[in-house]
Length: 339
Image (cartoon, rainbow, N blue to C red; front, side, top):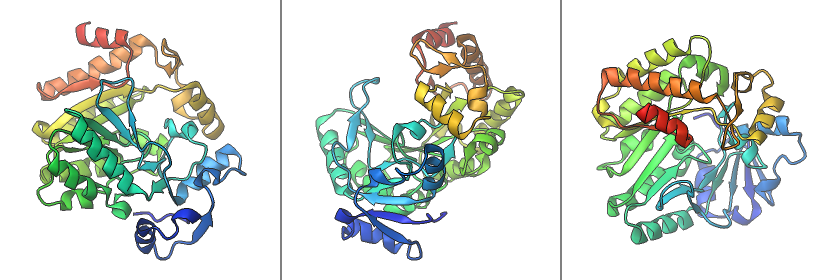
C-alpha cells in the first residue's frame, strides 16, 4: 500500500487503542496532533487542499450517527460512516464537494459502528449495508482490518448483506478469512484503461482491479461489477465492448451478483469543483445538461443508447446475470427495460 505523507491525529483519540494499532503499522510516517480533523487544510484554497491533502491520513472520532438510512431506496438500506473521503482522486467523484476537508479519515471509535450494525441486524428482516459511498471500502483495510471484524458479525447474522464497493486491490484480508460468510460481497467499479489513465487518478488499472475480483471469486466470494460512470467519448463503444468481454472471460459469470450501469450525474457544486481543479476534464467538457432531478447528465437518448448497447454486449455472453441501472430517472429505466 502507498503510505500517507503524514498522519493527523485528534488529541482526544491519541491514546485510543485503535489509533495506536494503526500508527504502529506506519512507523516511519510523521504524526501531527490536531484539535479537529474538520479544520485540516482550511487555510488552503480549495484546489490545493483537494490535491495535497489526499496524500495524508487522519485518525479521528466520529460524532453523531455512524449509519445512515438511504432515503431514495427501500427500507433497510444503509450507508456506513466508519471512514470518510478517499485517497484516490477521480475527476467525477462527488466527494470533492461533499466534505469541507479533503484528507481521508479513519474513525477510531469503530466499536460503535459494529454495535450499530448488530442492532440493525437484530431489528431488521433483511438489511443491506453499503460500504463505500463516502470512502473506498477497501483502500485502508490493511490498516483497519474492518472486513475481518465485519465478517464475524455477518457469520453470526445471515439475514443481512454487506457490500464493499471499491477500486482497490487491497484484498489480502478478504481472501484470508477462513469460511467467510456468503453475505459479504466485494464489488468493483471498473472502467477501460483509457478512462482510468485520463480521469481516475491514483487508482489501480482495470487489469489490476479485475485480477483482485477474480482472486476473491477464487476464494469463494460472489462479486459485484459496477460500470459507473460509463463515459461517452470517441471510441467508447469499442473500449467498453472489449472490457465487457474481458470481465466475462476472466470472472465466473455464475459468481457475479450483479452488473450495475450508470453514467455521469453531477451536482451543480460538483461541476464547479471539477472546473476549478480539472478545467479540461472530459467529465464536464462533454455534452451534459441539467436533468429533471437537477443533476448534470448526458441527454436521455444518449443514456438509453449507452445502456441498451452495454446490456446487449453482456447478454451475448451471458443471459442470466442481473443487470440494474444506478440512480437513473424513471423514464430512462422505463425506456431501457420496455423500450
